[in-house]
Amino acid sequence: MIKIFKWIGISGSWRATSPEIEKDVRTKVRDIVISGNGIITGGALNVDYQATDEVLKLGKEKQLKIFLPTTLQIYAAHYRKRAQEGVITFKQAEDLILQLQTFQDKNPNGLMENFNNIEVDKDTYYERNLEVVNASDEL
Image (cartoon, rainbow, N blue to C red; front, side, top):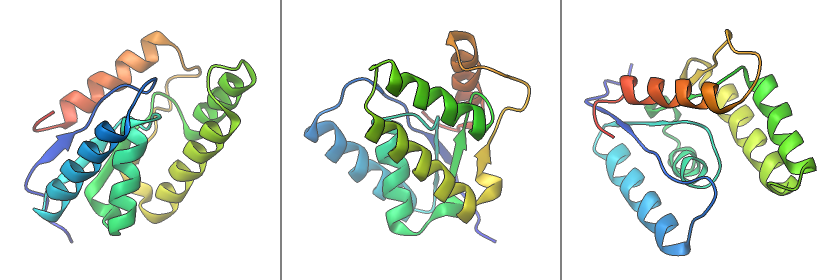
């Protein structure tokens, strides 16, 4: 069993990123995980996706928790709908869904689905964000 010293919440924009931000996120996540701490994300695009990807590349799935605003099934449908609306690309939607499914297969206890919410909206995102904050020792 892995003992995590601290859980560090990682949060940032899902809308915009840059190569510099991605490099910083990946470097910080690597440092956190290698030091024996854990990462918490909200399972969204860009910063959350990059942080999750880095943990998966390191093979440290047990040092990751992902909080979703709904079940993965509802969340996936929401992202596919946003792609149909042109808010995000189909590739972004499918890459995120695959990442979350892969993580769930590797660490089922690390994916925190919210079974009470039946839709993804501003309120359920805020609720998810509060869960990330409450579960984190640092943000």
